[in-house]
Amino acid sequence: MVAQLLTRLNFRRKLKTGSRMTVTDIAFDTLPWVWCLIKNFGRTTGDAMLGFVKKLEKYSRVMFIVASLLLVAAVGGVDYLTGREISVSAFYLLGVAMAVWFVSGGFGVFISGLSVFVSITSDLASGAEFKGFLVPLWNAVVLLTFYLVVVWLLSLLRSLYRNLAIQVGQRTRALTE
Image (cartoon, rainbow, N blue to C red; front, side, top):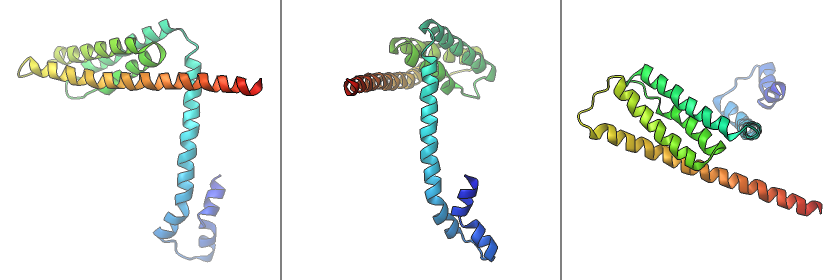
């Protein structure tokens, strides 16, 4: 593949003849290959991700409930240890996403609320001082809103994914009958 890429980029020809390569030569020669690599990388990554998700779907919901709770606790511990200066709020989404995808949207809402509670509690326990009680309340509302939007989007995506899998199965059976 690398040899084909180098051939396509005309490096061998340009190097043998001793002619100089300009930025324009490189740009126009590499753009189609870069686009091809990006397009194929996305497909193989998506295929690998779906295969990984299908393997995980074989496990019980109880395992994912426990794993989601443990993830929230672990991220909460890291949140407490890092203090107020470093935000790890995005890492709570790992537990939220796992809860929504493998358990249910309702459990994702619960994990979202728990994540916000653990986040605010770890901030207060690590010595964060606020000018009033409305500041942590506002932070909690904004964070919860963000998590709930993610829960809604993942629930919608999961529903579309399941419906598409059902339709593909039905159409495949109809073609084979």
